[in-house]
Each structure stands twice: as structure tokens, then as C-alpha cells.
Length: 269
Image (tube, rainbow, N blue to C red):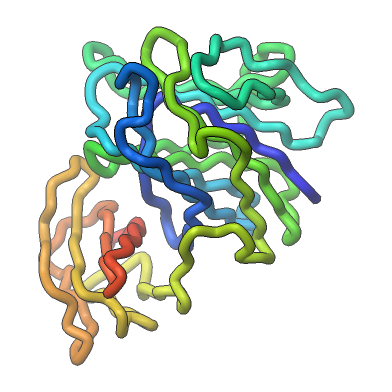
């Protein structure tokens, strides 16, 4: 199955439970038109074929705060038509935006929490499962479940950020498309040679690391964005004590020798 996804991001960033993300592309700071909207830094993706889920991680150069919006446009090839055109006025590039599923997110600093709705081509709300997380002030994490996400999943991606006025001001890349291929590393900007495995998850007293020999730092962050632990990684004793933590969900952020950052959700009993 080949699935094309066109993504319009009106403010964004990174994370996802037990996923290994592939960075599809990055974008320089300060190239958004008139310095409007959120300035995109990078886009990464991961898929969970077992759960038929797509994870999308986008980093911004700026902190995400206050009012912001996000729209994700999906061409899933599950309908015979090409879907509808995306109606936003685009002040940047990448105008060919067709979809059969459209996700709207809206964050209002006066009326939390973030509102999320998924529509079909007729404009009707659908009942797909959406998970939205805000692990820190720079990050938004989205998981969307689609039907029958096959092993040969491939995605064409166009990303852009905008502001609350409905205009797009920054594309990533500035023209063209990004590609995610579950069975290939072609065109991927970076990829960790060996997947970092953290176990058990859920955990109770301790977290262990497999393939962690290239790690330099470990941070543990709660979902309010507060850093609870920031320490150098001990490769001689790769065990993290979490017995003192109350039950809940935490973000485990690891940094390797190439200064690449990986974030995972940890469930504590």
C-alpha cells in the first residue's frame, strides 16, 4: 500500500511511545515569511504497523505557547476520488494539497485544552482514534490510527507552518516533498544505527537500556514539561532508578554522542 500524506502544520514539535523516528528533513531558522507564525525546525515520522498508527513529530525553532493551530491533510488512497483541495491561502510554496481526511487542532490560551477534530471529504466528523500530547513548550505529538497500515507503507509528506490567521508562512522543505518509507532509509537525514531499547515499559522500580553505549545524557520530564532528572549516562551501569516516582506517564529524553535526541514515553506503575 502506498499512502500519500500532505501535512500543514500551524505550530509544532516531538515525541512518541516506543517508536523509532526517522527525520525526514530540516529547515533553517528565520526563513518564515515576515517572521510570522511558527518557524519549523524539522519533521520526523514513525509508524506502528501492528496498531495501524502514524506518529508525527515536528520541532520548531520557537517555543509554542498561547494561541496556535495545526492541520494535517491525509491522502490515504482509500477512496476512488482525489479528495478535496485544502482551502488555506498559501503565502509560501507547495500548493497541491488534496485530502480524504483532515485533522484540525486548535489551542487557545484562554480556553484549554487543545481541541482536536478529524473530518472526511464531505466535512463530517469521523471517529478515528487521535492521541495528542504536549510534553514540553516546544513539542506537540500526534498519533492517528488508520485502517490496514501495511508493511510496505510509504508516505509523501509536505509540511508547512502558519499562524492563527489561516495563512501559511513557512514550508519544509521550501519546495518539493519529503518521503517516509518503512522499508528503506533512502532520503532520510539521520537514523540511529542501532535502535535504543528501553525496558520494561511499563516499569515499576528501574529502567534498563539496550544498545545504549552511545548515549551521553538522560533526562526525565513529566507531561507538564518539568525536568525531574538530568544526568550523564553511565554506560558501566545502564540502569535508571524510578522507584521514587509516582505512577504516571513520563518523557524519557536521551542524547547520544552525535547530539541526536530521542524521546520516548515511559509508563510508571
